Length: 302
Ligand code: HXC
Ligand code: NAP
Image 1 (cartoon, rainbow, N blue to C red):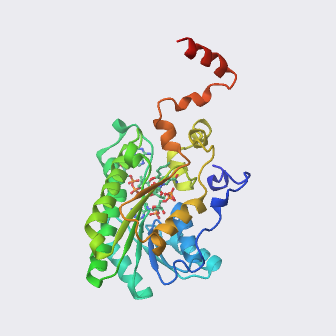
Image 2 (cartoon, rainbow, N blue to C red):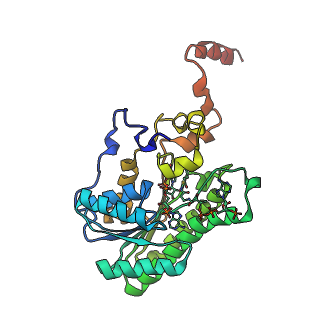
């Protein structure tokens, strides 16, 4: 496939694609990003490093993580710890936390970004296929939040959890039902922990991104010819997909102290995509401008 990250490259970049926060906004914070070796996790992690954070990236493939870590360090001058971990396994999550504390002294932020997904009619799925997505997305986010929450409460650290969900966490979506169930669960966890752990100074928030091209998502959600037939851009009122820096800006704000009074919120960043699908008459954008005169006459007559 063509590199999805370059899809928007020829277009004029909006201001929102520039770094937003001041240079030292995350200085002294140690941030774990699950699924941090690729895609959006990598983009968020790179920006956190530029803002002065220490970074821990984790996923199943150590070779990918190590490669990413050395590229990030060369690009930003920051320090990155790469630890292999399957978020489905609690003891592996505990090991990430242990290594992070040994390396950086403490951990302040968890970004639950790791995910698994693919499109399929639900009736074609095996029980194991369904559970494997639930286990990565929901159980993985639970495992990481639980391990970090116990640590933060025990050490009296005002931690911060940022969950990457999707807009169909609240709308639901056909053909990605395991992912929709799992992300819906993560959203419920976000609001529940915000209420329960707020008194420990732990904030829990979520971001619901619309389409942001990544190889991992595009290969599984728009394989082969589907990329041409279902151009996500057409579903978005702004007629473009998201730029990774736009998401990184929002994520950096939410994990920084500048968002200190935001707790239990889910922020959508989708160019208006989900509302476009929801509004009963939104499809009228297909009516040509010249038809509106005759339509107006008809509605006035009525
Ligand atoms: C039907 C499938 C399938 C498919 C796998 N399975 N792919 N069933 N259609 N396309 C079944 C397998 O046959 C098996 O069931 C079960 O699922 C588990 O598959 P494994 O390959 O053994 O699992 P695993 O190695 O853990 O891999 C997990 C994975 C894989 C999810 C299947 O794709 C993966 O590693 N993904 C990680 C990255 C990713 O998905 N990124 C995209 C995130 S995008 P049986 O019964 O045969 O044992 C995202 C964006 C949302 O979330 C919104 C976008 C706008
Ligand atoms: P991606 O590059 O495929 O990222 C998924 C990451 O999760 C990979 O790094 C993968 O690494 C890791 N992962 C998968 N299973 C794991 C496991 N069991 N344990 C640990 N790590 C695991 O896709 P992406 O598009 O950047 O997605 C990142 C996040 O954004 C996901 O939560 C996704 O749902 C969300 N999102 C994306 C979009 C979009 O348009 N791209 C839209 C809405 C939401 P390994 O294979 O090495 O484990």
